Each structure stands twice: as C-alpha cells, then as structure tokens.
View 1 (spheres, rainbow, N blue to C red):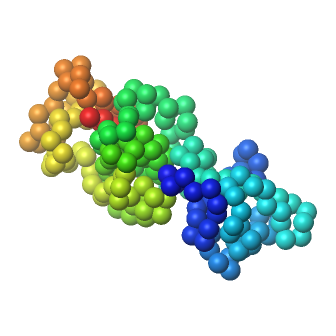
View 2: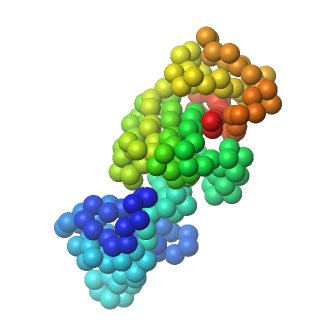
View 3: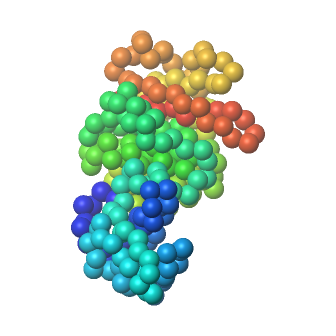
Length: 223
C-alpha cells in the first residue's frame, strides 16, 4: 500500500471503483475474473495498466476505474468485521495523537483495521503500530491483511490480546483504560496509571467499541 508503485502487476492490490458508493478491493491473480453489475473484467487484462486507468468490460458495455490502495480507499472498501471509524474521526484521532514518522502507537481494538491503516501510514518507516484485538478470528484476519497490504512486518503488528487483562505493559508505557460504565481511569494489575493531563508526553484517545457480549473501548496511545 505504501510502495508507491504506479503500474499494476500480478499480486497487486487494486481498489475497483464502480461509483462513489461502490468500491471493492481485490488482489490481481492470473486467470481470475471480476464480475459485477458493469460486466466481466479479467485480472490478466489489469496487469500492466497504470493505477487510475479506466478498464472496459469484456463486452465493452461497462467500465470501472482501477485505483491505487490508500488508507482512505481501504476504509471505503474493506470488509466490515466490526463497526468502523470513518475519515473524519480518523483524521481527528491522528491529529490529536500527533502521529508523525517515528511515532510508536498502541491501538487497543483492531476491529476491521480501518483506523489501523491510517495510523500505519502516519508512523512511517521509522515508527510502529502495535495493534491488539481480543477476538482471535478477527486478530488473525487483520494480521493477514496487514501483511497483504504491506503494513507488516515493517510498520504494523497485530496481536491477539485483551488490554483489559494484566500484563499489557511490555512496551514500558503507562496508559489509561476507560470503561463504558466507569469513566475513572484504571490500570492493569502491575501497571501504574496516570491521567493523560499528568503525562503530557503521551497522547491518549478513547473511542467506544461495542461487541455482542460486552462494552469495551478502543484506546490509542502515541509516544
């Protein structure tokens, strides 16, 4: 996703733009065909085209645009495993966290990876995103997407873990966890928590995330 390649090759990730409400992501594979309401589009024909080009269907009656992947387009085309954050909220979070190249960010609650991709771009090649997901299946899916989209191993790592449990302090951070029912900061056992105002070097953003069996929160810490 961050390679800067201009030409589509076998194995490339492409965002297929049908219209402003319908976008989908695919990986170009030899012999495969994309079928949608505008017709059939052979993957082999995509190879060699430049990102941004229009591609006409096999019958010549329809067309799509082949766009280069970006965090914004990924948010618009990803498969929703959970509720996600959209561009306005993502932009505000990155601003408030002051995410810059070289930043180290912890994301508690990977979910569908919408915010993760924007954070991975922000930290650059010299920083890193450590993302945690308490659901094992979602964590595995997100880790696969991170690798497929070029986020890992360099910029981002997704781990299966629950930040509400003790032991989530291997990075030497003091961070704050908020619950939906109780807005008082609490810390995992063995950690020393301080309110964000007491630790100005760190930026803490908390956004609600809802699951089927409990309410939890998504916490992002940038150092």
